[in-house]
Length: 349
Ligand code: SF4
Image (cartoon, rainbow, N blue to C red):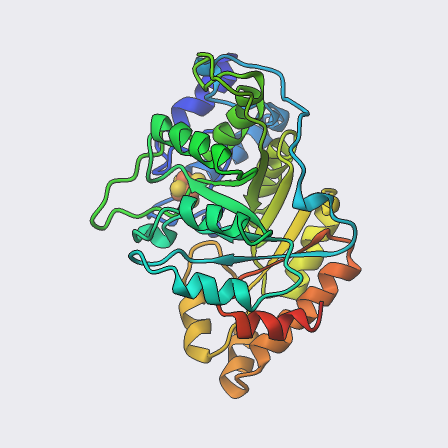
């Protein structure tokens, strides 16, 4: 570890999510979503001034697990499908009733994979493991979302073992929204370190600490990137690092065609990236979503939705077409387990 890396790790201790490898994607113009200034904006500006940005290409904070080479072993993946692909997502039940998931699966078509979300906004839902397993029985690929917020590193590994044994091969690693109401966030590791450990240790038949496992666990790892982030170059520096070993990326929801254009110009991972699209169906929804950290909705677009409730769907369809034209691998449609809304959008794919 170089003195500069040690300095970054020291500064990053002030980050509420303990991010060691770049920003969490929720800062807005240098402000932290939790309050005060974003530590990572400060780190980034310091390194930029000193001409040391390349130091961020290394995975920091993983040294206690022992650095290992990235494995290029991959499981068969929904990303291998030729042509433009579509993924969507579903919420597990708040309780035990799987009927909404059953109805959803019965009514969707031409979807390559389905993310099962992990306690969005820190609100406890059923673990994504069971719905993911259930999805495998419907011949659709589940993407198991796992956040570093709710489990310590031992629990994360236990769940990954269970996921693999259940036939789940795709995992989206996330840091998780910062939530403290009725709970205490863990953040033992950040999502970059988690992705790195899944791609280095597990395929070699080791757990994260190097102890032998009874199976070589080969999973495809997805990561998240936020094209709305400001400054974007800081976000893209972290994105480049993660794409050294990640198999696919899904973006935060984009609402602005200019933001999608800018992201396309500034990145070269089109073949591994799915653009996040969230159809807004009401003015109330637009107002609520515009307050979510890391999301950017132009005021003019919110006004358009106020005057025409179909403007959100229209914009989503335009963004799907734009993602296709720009050469991205596909789109990730965030339709809140609403198969009718999903079908409307699928018509334009
Ligand atoms: S915005 Fe995110 S990365 Fe920045 S200090 Fe806050 S939690 Fe950390």
